Length: 102
Image (cartoon, rainbow, N blue to C red):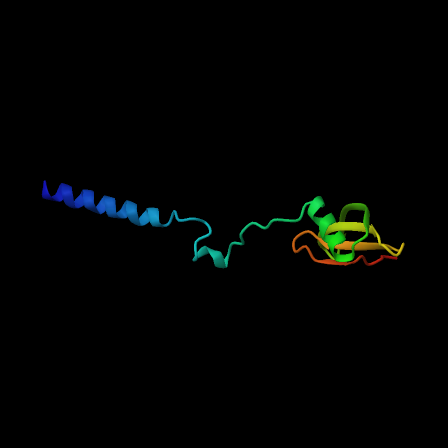
């Protein structure tokens, strides 16, 4: 009977040790290799960023890519009557002038 208890305790300890390896995929050990999911700006948030940066009235906004970055191309009618085309990066929310491609 003594050996049965020793075996049972050994199995229990082995199971607990294995359960430790079932930790969250975002644990400290794994954080060096895994990146947490990121959130990107939706179209409304991108429009708000463009208007906050330059004021005026939003004319249009559409999905765009600049220098390999996903984002939004926003066209804004400024208060002085000029039209400004902007790029709002979806991942960071950074707003910059849209570069024209020839």
